[in-house]
Length: 370
Ligand SMILES: *Cc1c(COP(=O)(O)O)cnc(C)c1O
Image (cartoon, rainbow, N blue to C red; front, side, top):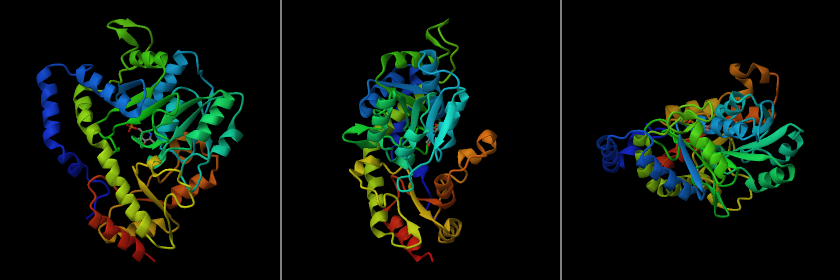
């Protein structure tokens, strides 16, 4: 069986280093808000090229707290509209509605799976205050176009970079394009903890200070509360683990790119549309291949066919947010491109420990599908 992602194998590579890091935390007697977190925040902001990185409990909280902080700072208020791609993971939308703001869903582009920037302009109203760009599957959204639109219309830009650690364009990394960015370190993400974890990156000092309080009951100083904050902290043990894993992120991305290139060069099946087709890739660096997603009209048959050959695949995602029971108020909307994507996408195995010989087996199986 070829697993979709072999987390056991991935983390086993760093077993000694991880045990050493955990032992250090256990023996320190200090488990929340200590030197491991400070070290990780320093390392991760340096990695992204931002002034600040603020550790939080998970990626959803990172997104929620960015919007919450801007409400506290008077930059956003309830009822404001935030433009967001319709085909994103539900967390992006939840962050908006959890703050009582209004998500304005916009179609993606079929070739990149990322938000169609021309449709952003058409969706802007007097109430629009921000664009939430998602770097879906590990590829940067068209941030050059999004920056132009946001500057022209005086909009804030949030990046959902949960799938895009290390993706870059023109030397600028994911997390350093918008006014603030949310990262997830869920175990299966390209930079994964051994549990839940997340972070926010920004260059804005006022925002960073508000976030540091908000994640900790609204308090900078013990028992002094300036906001009605939450408890969303990144544990010392996860920070220590992330300090180990961050050192290996770039070489893991290099391996993902090599697997992706093998797929792109060798999958030749008229029933399958590969990612990046018809895209003028300015630079391959844009993509960190969190997922390798193909389109196939007979997606369910293809998934079954691969399963019979011992290849595990996943669907990201089977139901778009506007068709979820949770969002009855959005159920009447139709987004043909989004719905096509959800009907046709299939994610092939990709990861830092997938071997080239297994990738070759996957290529052969995909090419045999009729
Ligand atoms: C994983 C993910 C999140 C949420 O991260 P968690 O750490 O699971 O809360 C948000 N947005 C996107 C696009 C994701 O893939």
